[in-house]
Image 1 (cartoon, rainbow, N blue to C red):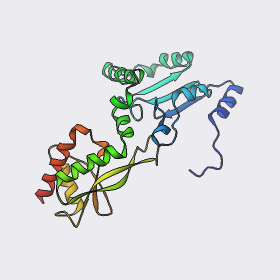
Image 2 (image 1 turned 60 degrees about the vertical axis):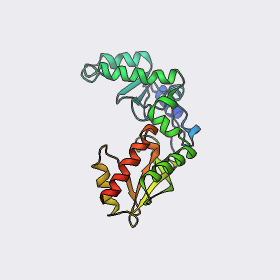
Image 3 (image 1 turned 90 degrees about the horizontal axis):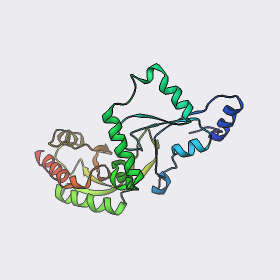
Image 4 (image 1 turned 120 degrees about the horizontal axis):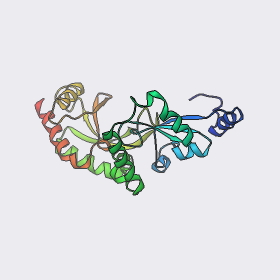
Length: 230
């Protein structure tokens, strides 16, 4: 934010090529789907980075890829081989469980089912209508203190910083519930199972985008219990 000019990756790639050095692009997020299709800012994909001239692209196995935490290097085979031969590559290599989880995640993309099977993309793809219906069901189960309001879902600081999606929230006003919003949040965290909300303007807010649909009834029961405990 606030730069007068940001060099395009192709410009940096041209400068690197002219000087005979490889361009290493720390892309970070690892998006394999078009974020712009979901109303978010465009996030570079590894393929776009390589096409623009990057010799190696580094992405995360979690974040927008939606798999296990892992560091992934993609690109020129000779550069990858140089990295693999370096002594530090051995103690930092991924273990079998990480590789198995990464493999399972990538298969969802190959099968065209990532939006349905990878949790982060299922959350991003949830429509406002779906979230409204779910939020109303949870609010009804929680009782008279709960209502449904408009809000924003934050994707994350590491990927798409500052970008949000419109959502519908279950809101508990401090003056409508026993105790303060902070006290209600504490009771929810101490519940079984625990539930985490956020506090804004003296209200406790719960975003159904970050809850698996099969857990809505459980959330409603936990919220009702926390309100009753006051």
